[in-house]
Image (cartoon, rainbow, N blue to C red):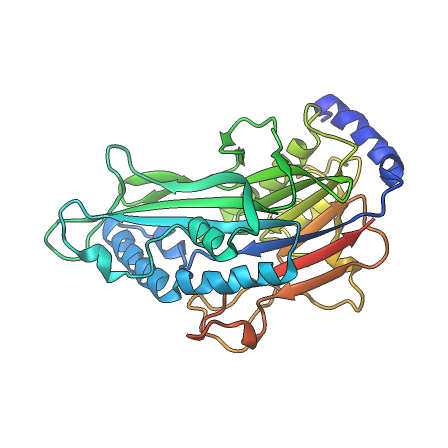
Length: 388
């Protein structure tokens, strides 16, 4: 399979043999990726087999959202950004939850901390030091002809209506100018794209897709040009369904083809790809195809087709070979110490940065917890300073 004008003439001969086209600049860039955690496990909702089970699972998710208190957690998440002052930040699981109470039941008030816009709260916590550079809207739960998903809290048959939006967002420090990348994708969403590989799910009578996406910006930092992409790939087995195992590697291939598309690829820009990939260096595919991590680092597609280059996992350029585990705390964020067991929050680069990379896992120490004892997220954040 040769696509995209032979993958843009083998990606302009692998950026003129990895770096000649970018020679002359010693500028550096500081970036971060942060999964903010929606605050609840959606798997019980996705796997519910009856409307009654889905309703019960949704009520439990609202309880968890309220208890996991994003308005409190967001300040800790923002503080890690403000302390490090990265030029660009990739955020995942930037949710908005809203409750509509058309019959004035008062039940929305039972979940005091659940209903808010995580992006608005994030920007308020960051003050004027960061701006929204680009957004892709992913999962959106809204049934036709209703302003939200009906949730029944008693036997009266009178519902409250739940609205849910998930986004991936790129933030830019206020002194950095950015332009959203116009990817050539079939399914555009806000400034980015939704993947074609999605899982259809039933929520009672409601049918929807578990959307994932990617979004990018071009930025100039200290005179050097960068393309920064943020994504959140599907989990390995959505709902525990083996048939869903193809989604994540298929999305990785879609991302590669979008990056190398002949109308989009720019060999004059350093490429940075960050996010929650739900794929670690030690993953083994249950269906015998290259995993998402293997595709990105190895420079191959899901069918094994080689690409002009692979990406460098910048954590591996850090001195000392630390594990760098980033996921996951307990769903209620109450555990101590950290329970991270895999490294799935990643930053990739091409060409490879020069020398050793200064990279850190953030929000993974007990002192990072909020005053009420919550971890800022079930994922750690990752910060990396790259020098070329």
